[in-house]
Image: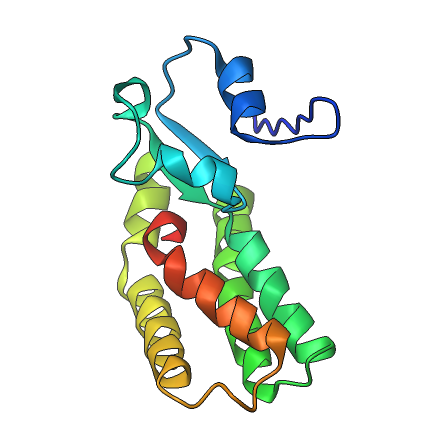
Length: 155
C-alpha cells in the first residue's frame, strides 16, 4: 500500500508546517519535490532529529520539468530526458504487474539494464550542462539544474 500526504497550514507548506506535522516521529525516509524548506532534511546541516532520515526527491517532478521544457520551451533534447525517466516508471509498473518481491525488485533495479539507463541519463545531463546555457529556455535550464542538484536524492 502506498501513501502520500500533502499538507498545508494557513496556505503555507514551509519547514515549520512539516516539522510540526512530523512531531517526534522517527522516519526512515521522506520524499519531497525538493522545495527549499524541506532540503534541510537531507543536507549536512540537518538536525540530530533527522540525522538518520533519508531525503528522497520525486523523480516525477524531474520528468515533468523536462516535459515542460520540451512542450513549452521547445527544447528537443528535453524529450530524451523525459523518455529515459519514463522508462524507470515503466519498469516499476512491470515489477508491480509481475508481482515481484522486494528482493526481485532490488535485483532488477541494480541490474545492467537499469545501470545502462542511469549511465545514459547522467552522460546526457553532463553533456547538456557543459554547453552554453545562454540560448536555452528557462524551463530547460530549470530541468537540468533540478536533475543535477537532486541526482543523489532521486537515484
